Image (cartoon, rainbow, N blue to C red):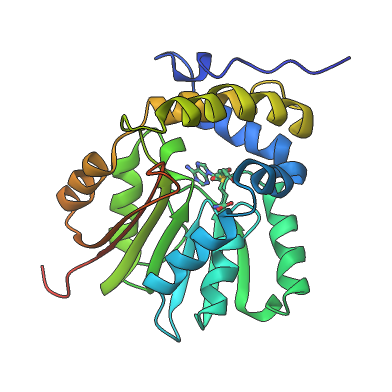
Length: 248
Ligand SMILES: C[S@@+](CC[C@H](N)C(=O)[O-])C[C@H]1O[C@@H](n2cnc3c(N)ncnc32)[C@H](O)[C@@H]1O
């Protein structure tokens, strides 16, 4: 019998445990996640992570990739000569896929995959150069807790980068973008992922999310100095890079 999943909107009701919904959902689509990303973005998603890595990584950096999924942001950072990437994700089935890719890219010795939660990282204080996440922060109910953790583990002068689909701003392309997110992606996603709500969750989570300006305010409030704000893909995607100041 086909498995039914809670609706995406249900995941946002006050009584729902959204983190559990997200963990189970990503766990059950892990095997088809990369393929679906390529279909949804026409392959552009690799370019965005590369751009983030170029803005972010200084050779030799130790990087923590929070919500690493199948590891692509970690591998983009390693290609920019990071010395080590630690991928952390709470959906366990994502990690073997990331580790297989590390072998394929001959990055086995430079990549570690760990089960963990963005709001409570298994990493020591002031110990890493980069905290980064791609398409994750929108899924975290307590974003401030995640930024607090980023601050805690980063060395003074360390960098934080967020690549995320931010709340849509009205533009000439809005009707086409809405059609893509609200109808085409859920329809194709249901067929490819064989999960009946995972790709309905995507437009709902974007609608409930923040604009890039609101995200900047949040990072600023967490104590970071914003260095880069870039809009990509018809202003649907935002890349933010900020720094933990060297002295408080
Ligand atoms: C949309 S995927 C992005 C994966 C990867 N970063 C990429 O660029 O393809 C979101 C990932 O974040 C993970 N995630 C969401 N919330 C998390 C949390 N609180 N702690 C750890 N991982 C989380 C999910 O399990 C999922 O693998």
